Length: 283
Image 1 (cartoon, rainbow, N blue to C red):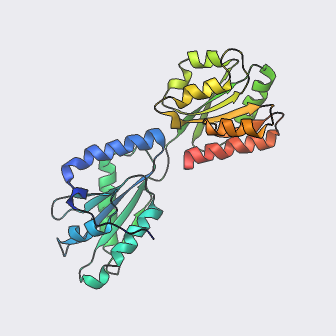
Image 2: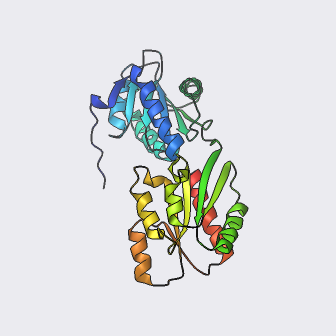
Image 3: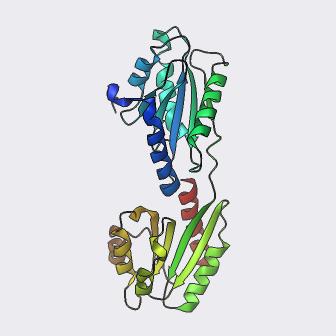
């Protein structure tokens, strides 16, 4: 059983710091698709709500102390609204020890283009709507910012056989994910790929690479990508004619995300690509 440790006032920050930490979190959302949640809490009848909030939030959450009359704000990094439900349940558990009402608004943020002013406006409006509802801990979930902005994913296909690269490109082009654009480029050897600046952008990147290549082989390409500071943005498919279980295990242990054995089933391959793209976009 996981025991919750009591938070100290180190988890409570002045409202003036919210802008800086909010935009830092937004940068992670835009670059790495990291979801986070902002919770607005308002209790017109009691200024003591901050003490209760500190007892109910997690060690990783931050409570921002806004001026009297304004909602206090909790920033929950890497957290969706389902996880925020646990906080609401804990807060509702305090109803037996308090007589005043506490309104709550939960805003999950997936859209990296949202502005602080938009979030504050929606949060204020929604927490006031919550207080119009019955109960001692009324809450609403505002999903205005769950809608994702259009995203571009780069796809690199690396194989010396032009027929293989043509077939793979056609299969990838057939995959459709709403709000997702695929920018595809073909390379016929690993060295040419590494020497290009194509893979060094901030885009999420699918790399479909054969294990045997002229000059740098598939594993050398893999090692180059995994040594980068933003290595998590690359999803690597390794293609091979080999069927050795030991070689597959070795590749997985060294950073391969998916293994494709040639000759491959086109429908299965297309499904694998679609599954990965869905996970990249929707999390």
